[in-house]
Image 1 (cartoon, rainbow, N blue to C red):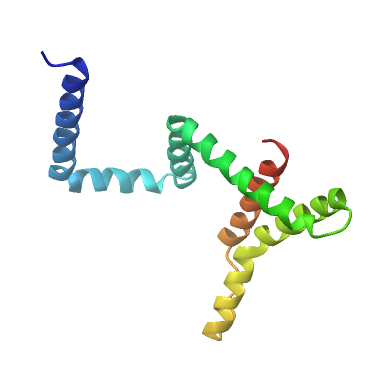
Image 2 (tube, rainbow, N blue to C red):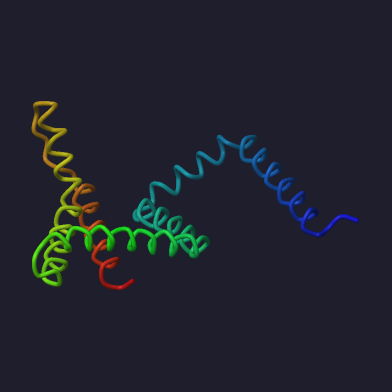
Length: 146
Protein backbone atom coordinates (compact mmCIF):
# COMPACT_ATOMS: atom_id res chain seq x y z
CA UNK A 1 0.00 0.00 0.00
CA UNK A 2 1.36 3.40 -0.96
CA UNK A 3 1.74 6.07 1.64
CA UNK A 4 0.02 9.42 1.35
CA UNK A 5 3.44 11.09 1.21
CA UNK A 6 4.17 9.38 -2.12
CA UNK A 7 0.78 10.40 -3.49
CA UNK A 8 1.33 14.03 -2.43
CA UNK A 9 4.78 14.01 -3.98
CA UNK A 10 3.46 12.68 -7.29
CA UNK A 11 0.61 15.20 -7.25
CA UNK A 12 3.00 18.08 -6.54
CA UNK A 13 5.35 16.99 -9.29
CA UNK A 14 2.46 16.59 -11.75
CA UNK A 15 1.05 20.03 -10.93
CA UNK A 16 4.49 21.63 -11.23
CA UNK A 17 5.03 20.10 -14.67
CA UNK A 18 1.51 21.09 -15.77
CA UNK A 19 1.83 24.73 -14.68
CA UNK A 20 5.35 24.98 -16.12
CA UNK A 21 4.07 23.81 -19.48
CA UNK A 22 1.25 26.38 -19.31
CA UNK A 23 3.75 29.15 -18.58
CA UNK A 24 5.91 28.06 -21.51
CA UNK A 25 2.95 27.82 -23.86
CA UNK A 26 1.62 31.27 -22.94
CA UNK A 27 5.03 32.91 -22.46
CA UNK A 28 4.36 35.86 -24.83
CA UNK A 29 1.11 36.73 -23.10
CA UNK A 30 2.71 36.43 -19.66
CA UNK A 31 5.61 38.65 -20.79
CA UNK A 32 3.14 41.31 -21.98
CA UNK A 33 1.31 41.20 -18.63
CA UNK A 34 4.58 41.53 -16.71
CA UNK A 35 5.64 44.47 -18.90
CA UNK A 36 2.27 46.10 -18.24
CA UNK A 37 2.75 45.78 -14.47
CA UNK A 38 6.35 46.99 -14.74
CA UNK A 39 5.15 50.37 -15.98
CA UNK A 40 3.14 51.04 -12.80
CA UNK A 41 5.16 53.25 -10.39
CA UNK A 42 6.43 51.44 -7.33
CA UNK A 43 6.03 47.90 -8.66
CA UNK A 44 9.76 47.55 -9.27
CA UNK A 45 10.27 48.22 -5.57
CA UNK A 46 7.38 46.20 -4.15
CA UNK A 47 7.75 42.96 -6.12
CA UNK A 48 11.36 42.19 -5.06
CA UNK A 49 10.48 43.06 -1.46
CA UNK A 50 7.49 40.72 -1.59
CA UNK A 51 9.56 37.90 -3.07
CA UNK A 52 12.33 38.27 -0.48
CA UNK A 53 9.77 38.47 2.33
CA UNK A 54 8.12 35.31 1.07
CA UNK A 55 11.47 33.50 0.93
CA UNK A 56 12.40 34.61 4.43
CA UNK A 57 9.01 33.58 5.84
CA UNK A 58 9.04 30.29 3.97
CA UNK A 59 12.55 29.38 5.06
CA UNK A 60 12.60 31.14 8.43
CA UNK A 61 14.33 28.25 10.19
CA UNK A 62 17.19 28.20 7.68
CA UNK A 63 17.55 31.99 7.71
CA UNK A 64 17.76 31.96 11.52
CA UNK A 65 20.26 29.11 11.42
CA UNK A 66 22.40 30.93 8.86
CA UNK A 67 22.37 34.17 10.86
CA UNK A 68 23.22 32.28 14.07
CA UNK A 69 26.17 30.55 12.40
CA UNK A 70 27.37 33.84 10.94
CA UNK A 71 27.15 35.48 14.35
CA UNK A 72 29.09 32.61 15.97
CA UNK A 73 31.82 32.80 13.35
CA UNK A 74 32.13 36.60 13.72
CA UNK A 75 32.22 36.38 17.52
CA UNK A 76 34.92 33.71 17.42
CA UNK A 77 36.96 35.76 14.97
CA UNK A 78 36.67 38.97 17.00
CA UNK A 79 37.41 37.19 20.30
CA UNK A 80 40.49 35.59 18.75
CA UNK A 81 41.71 38.96 17.48
CA UNK A 82 40.90 40.64 20.81
CA UNK A 83 42.90 38.05 22.74
CA UNK A 84 46.06 39.40 21.12
CA UNK A 85 45.35 42.95 22.31
CA UNK A 86 45.55 44.35 25.84
CA UNK A 87 42.32 45.28 27.66
CA UNK A 88 40.26 42.57 26.01
CA UNK A 89 36.80 44.05 26.75
CA UNK A 90 37.71 47.41 25.23
CA UNK A 91 39.47 45.67 22.35
CA UNK A 92 36.32 43.70 21.48
CA UNK A 93 34.28 46.91 21.29
CA UNK A 94 36.90 48.64 19.17
CA UNK A 95 37.21 45.65 16.86
CA UNK A 96 33.44 45.52 16.41
CA UNK A 97 33.35 49.21 15.46
CA UNK A 98 36.28 48.73 13.08
CA UNK A 99 34.67 45.65 11.55
CA UNK A 100 31.32 47.41 11.06
CA UNK A 101 33.06 50.34 9.39
CA UNK A 102 35.09 48.13 7.08
CA UNK A 103 32.27 45.75 6.10
CA UNK A 104 29.92 48.66 5.39
CA UNK A 105 32.46 50.43 3.19
CA UNK A 106 33.78 47.34 1.44
CA UNK A 107 31.48 47.68 -1.63
CA UNK A 108 32.58 51.31 -2.10
CA UNK A 109 36.24 50.36 -1.87
CA UNK A 110 35.76 47.57 -4.40
CA UNK A 111 33.91 49.96 -6.71
CA UNK A 112 36.67 52.57 -6.46
CA UNK A 113 39.38 49.99 -7.20
CA UNK A 114 37.39 48.78 -10.19
CA UNK A 115 36.90 52.36 -11.45
CA UNK A 116 40.64 53.06 -11.09
CA UNK A 117 41.46 49.92 -13.01
CA UNK A 118 39.25 51.07 -15.89
CA UNK A 119 40.91 54.53 -15.70
CA UNK A 120 37.70 56.52 -15.79
CA UNK A 121 35.93 57.94 -12.83
CA UNK A 122 32.21 57.24 -12.61
CA UNK A 123 30.46 58.25 -9.39
CA UNK A 124 29.19 55.37 -7.29
CA UNK A 125 25.61 54.45 -7.99
CA UNK A 126 22.87 54.77 -5.43
CA UNK A 127 22.67 50.96 -5.32
CA UNK A 128 26.19 50.81 -3.92
CA UNK A 129 25.27 53.22 -1.15
CA UNK A 130 22.14 51.22 -0.30
CA UNK A 131 24.24 48.05 -0.22
CA UNK A 132 26.65 49.69 2.23
CA UNK A 133 23.77 50.80 4.44
CA UNK A 134 22.23 47.32 4.33
CA UNK A 135 25.51 45.64 5.28
CA UNK A 136 26.03 48.05 8.16
CA UNK A 137 22.52 47.44 9.52
CA UNK A 138 22.79 43.66 9.09
CA UNK A 139 26.10 43.32 10.89
CA UNK A 140 25.18 45.79 13.62
CA UNK A 141 22.06 43.69 14.29
CA UNK A 142 24.17 40.53 14.34
CA UNK A 143 26.44 42.05 16.94
CA UNK A 144 23.65 43.36 19.15
CA UNK A 145 20.37 41.42 18.77
CA UNK A 146 21.32 37.77 18.41
